[in-house]
Length: 269
Image 1 (cartoon, rainbow, N blue to C red):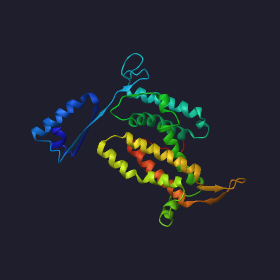
Image 2 (image 1 turned 135 degrees about the vertical axis):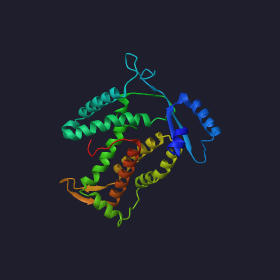
Image 3 (image 1 turned 120 degrees about the vertical axis):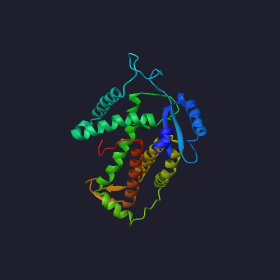
Image 4 (image 1 turned 180 degrees about the vertical axis):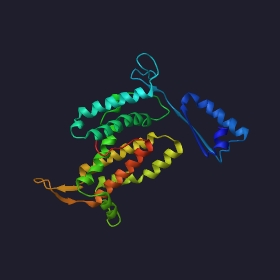
């Protein structure tokens, strides 16, 4: 701690270790203050404790032989299961090999990260690939799919990002439907959520917020026409540009959430 404060000049130090070391860091913090090199008014020091990862038998997560699971092995298994999941849904038939590989990596790495971050970090949690790869509920797969779907709506309407940015300067977003109101109010809470996680360092709050965005958007999209098409020809009859702007705002907030959580998004999935 002395090295980090005096040599590197850190003004915020975060120790991420298991909850078993909580007492150690309380003592360390007190000693550092008494020694005179830690001034809480000038340097913020946080202990970020985390619980234990359990297997489905509710015991410490280990291999069948009782050894500690290596991260490389875990990621390789995630890649295999993610590819199996995508193929089971027929995605290999509609995606290019490059797109399939990108989706495979996004799902595999994303589901492992998200499963860890979406739980209250001080609690133990059960590691289950099957639950991580579910496409319903508060999972990385569901959220990544929701994001790609949201990003595709403007493309379907043949509206570019440049056109949306231009429209943002000239078009008022007429929030009239109750589902529009609900989505808009959720998006406006983004700064509040960022302030909270910066203060308490509980990232599961951001995961819950991201899931709330996705579910609120689903309600909005099911109830509010964004692009109206002719039922016979499929030709576009009308584009509600104000609703497309709300969709673009949704995509941008979700993208920022993914970036903070360290999850990679893909254009198609």
